[in-house]
Amino acid sequence: MTMDRKDPATLLELAIQSLLNNEPAAIHALREIPRELFPPLFTAAFKGGCKKTLAAMVKTWPFFCLHIGKLGVQEAHDECLKAMIDGLQVLPEQNTATGGSKLKILDLRPQSDCRTTCSHIITKSPVCFHSCPYFQNFPLKREAQHSTANLGSQSQLPRNPTELVVDISLDNTLRATEFLCLLLNKVEQSIGCLHLCCRDLQIYKLSKYKNKVKFLNMLCIDHLKVDQASLSEANKLLSQMVLLDSLTLSKITFRSLNGKVFRTFLSHLERMDNLQELHLSYFCIRDHLHEVLRVLPNDLDFLNLRFCELSYRDFTFLSQSHQATHLKLLNLSNNPVSWEDSGPLRILLENLSGTLQHLELNHCLIADSTVSALIPALSRCSHLRVFSFASNPITMSMLMRIVQHLTLLMELKYVFYPIPVHCYEQWHPHGNLDQQKLAEVKAQLKMMLHRVQRNDMNWNTFSE
Ligand SMILES: [Zn+2]
Ligand SMILES: [Zn+2]
Image (cartoon, rainbow, N blue to C red; front, side):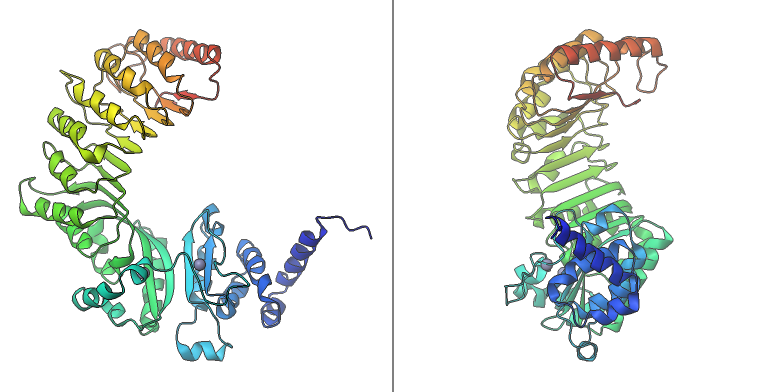
């Protein structure tokens, strides 16, 4: 025998390829092949864009769940996804007609760390690690919520609906609108036997999609991103959500920080016990950050407050807040403040030195004296991987001092640094740059990194 060890895998691949070269034969073979072959055949059919085979595989899938997982990460395979949605049999009579698919969870989310199916050959009982958290955690609440919330055709779910799990991004493209229509049609045809489970919803220009999103079940969403909306529109969405892990709100308009709409927003935030990440940008909360912090859970991981017009007073509250004591990510960029005293920033970094991995302080009007006061606290952030403090008025000598200290942080790999003030005719983030001087700065930096053997670090300006 001349077969070497890798031959079995190669033979399986060859067999699958030859099967897929003849789609009608592949579809016919689905009735006979052992169920262990379904996952590798599915992977090959997805990669090869064999739509008919994919639809047929969904119809006859012998496991409880099917996840596209990492196959969906590389690129969008719209036609494959559509074929799979088409193939999904949700009505009981459809299932008997095709010999009975065991599929109850079709998961079309791109996820890098997910297997094609959670079921194992030896397990008898159906199991899926990604089934709808809402049905798992809130079986009782569900009845109550369904009777009150306007959930369209989803309000009368049977005990065991098939789950179609998706991430939805509504970005004003034809593609997004078509995909949403396809999903909503499928729900409608299923007469209550299909649960469209959206976990990650991103909406650009909420006012355009107001009428469409009301057909989605908001209770399952764990990640929400809304870009461009009035706060009262965003409140309407939030009022239906209970399981949010991550909330991103950008370019949000409202009349007053002392008005009812902002108070309603705070009351919604207060209900979000699971919230791990809050990202606000272009969302003015000047002098009201303390009210936001007060309603956030204590174990928040990410706090992103870019372009929030924060005041010195807000920074002071932040440094005293429990919610900012074990953050992994903090972004306070584009909140220019006149730093008469660097105390709040220093205390904040001291509090976070044990956990912080990602820090951004771009364009905050931080000058030498403030940086100098921050260096001891920064030097203690031993988990820091990314530090960005571009577009701040720093001198060359201060930059060199920072380099000396930051190169001691071994986890730190990415730094975005400010171009020193002497490189500008007159300092301004968009001011005229002397390219020759900038080139000298870069050369000197490179030399310093080399000298301390930190060539693994990436130091860049925003101009690169
Ligand atoms: Zn699963
Ligand atoms: Zn769900």
